[in-house]
Amino acid sequence: MSTPASLSSRVAPIAWRLTTVVDVVQETSSARTLVLDAPGWPGHRAGQHVDVRVTAEDGYQAERSYSIASAPEDSRLALTIERLDDGEVSPYLTDVLQVGDRLELRGPIGGYFVWDATLDGPLLLVAGGSGLVPLMAMLRHRAAVTAADARTRNHMPARLLYSSQRWDDVIYREELARLAQNDETLEVTLTLTREQPQGWTGFRRRIDRMMLAEVGWPPSERPQVFVCGPTLLVESAASAMVDLGHDPARVKTERFGPTGGSA
Amino acid sequence: MTEPFVSRGFHGRREPKSAAVRLPPGQYETRDFPVLSAGPTPHTALATWDFTLRGANGADVRWTWADFEGLPHESVKTDIHCVTKWSKFDTLWEGVSVDTLLAEAAKRGVEPAPYVLAVSDGGYTTNLPLANVTRGKAWIAVAYAGAPLEPEHGGPARLLVPDLYFWKSAKWVRALTFMQHDKPGFWESFGYHNYGDPWREQRYRGDE
Image (cartoon, rainbow over the protein chains, first blue to last red):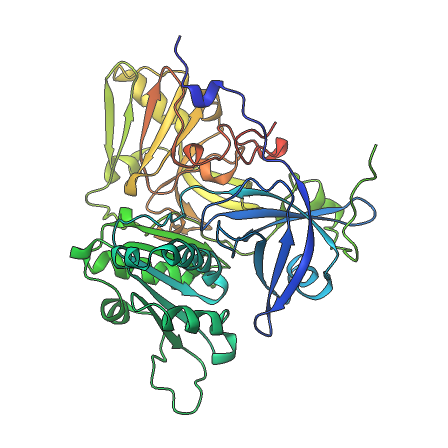
């Protein structure tokens, strides 16, 4: 009897580990980054996530998944957490947890929604809200890799289309501007769907097919596409990419949030 | 012995006891129906949809949508558990039991085997032991909450295997292929558990 090695070989479980909060960054009124010291962290790929487990004094526990925001090259592990007002865990992480507190997590998890900075063509990132987090890990990874040799940028040009409700909801706003300013092969396009600052000349509607055609590459360029955000945004953006002629196998998605009423 | 870790300042919500006993470890109850898939939602027209059972002996049997509609349907009320931590109670489905399909297939010479690979539109696959899809444990579901299954939830038809984490309930399923030997499917190849029992919290490779 032959059994595939991946099934028969014993693999150690992904262990829970205690990390320490070494910094917190308030990104927007509802999103906060936790910078963690994670001794023995095995490393991760851009786009992966961790499972966080919090434990009350009586032993009650809750688990949630959060995307990793930091690049594999960063010395610290960073998670950016969006506060859900009716959430059980996210308000604890955004409002209660402080520098010096410990946080239990395990990871990295997920091997499909990942991007490694290789020289294999253009990258299109499409995000809504805190769906930017795993894509930011990709941009930071790309920046770290291309910093050593700026010419490599030309082999992996990147475009980000990011939908937020308001200017003040744009997470990593200054860092995105800085990255784009220093790199002519990175384009960052924002659409502000609810409220725009005075003099705003950019997009002000939800991401749609026309916008994706305008901002993204044509299918002939065979971009790798990553879409992350609320379900409705991901559904419509991913479908639009397929309608535009992109290979569905090159459109990777990650969705969160309720379906908006449909069963 | 080290002291068990406590998260400073975390109190948490307690599910009512009636809910708590129905929740596998690490899960929380949601009233929404979240959508999770790795890629764009395929839209397959009913006119071109079909469903195939492939025996390990090479024989196969195929149903068109019209054929499928003619098979006896069952109603299923069940709790479902997603590996991303949400559980949903008392979901209502309608579909054809895999037992029914197997009985039909047996008449046409399709022989089962110890493992099954579910194959979907869009290329998704997931593997299951035969024992988890027989004896009233699995259905090809075509309706949810009294309405045709929506594409984003796997319509026109998805596998429904409530005993295992919900990634095993393959959306947009088009075939079940019997295998003599187990073979990891899509998520099972990307670090998720090969079996996926929520009550043993078998989320990732190496768990338990």
